[in-house]
Image (cartoon, rainbow, N blue to C red; front, top):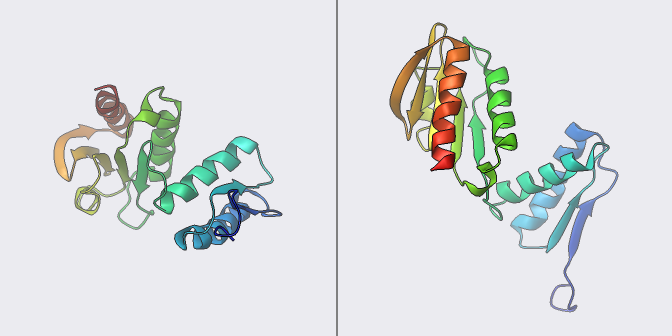
Length: 169
C-alpha cells in the first residue's frame, strides 16, 4: 500500500476495550505490524481517559524500538524473595518520573527490584536502580552498589534524590 499511495498509513485498533484488555489488544495488533515495518502513524483506542491512550501508544512504540525518548522503567515480578512493597515502590518511582519536568529529556533505564541478592545483577544494564530487602535496600548504578539504606521510606527518598541528580545533571 505504501508504494501505491503518497500519504501515511494509519494503524489503529478500534473497539479495543478497557485499559488492560485494550492495551493488550493494541500492543499485539499494532506491534506485529510495526515489527514488519508496516504503518506510519498509530492510534490506541481505550475505554479510558485519552491521556492513557497516548501513554500506551508511546510505550508500544518504545517496545517496538521505534521511540526511545524518556526514562524506561524495568522491575521484577514479585516472588518469594520479595520482602518489600515492590509494587508500591515501582508505582512511586514511575509517578515521580512522570511528574518530573526534565525526565522526558533523559534517556535512562531505571530499575526497581525486589531482591537485594539478585536485583543489582539482574538489572546491571540499568543506569540506576534500587533493590529492597527486609531491613535495608541498596541503590546501584550499572550493577555496582552505591550505598545501602535502612527502611523502605528512607530507601525511596535516597533513591529519588540520586535519580534527580542524574536527571538534573
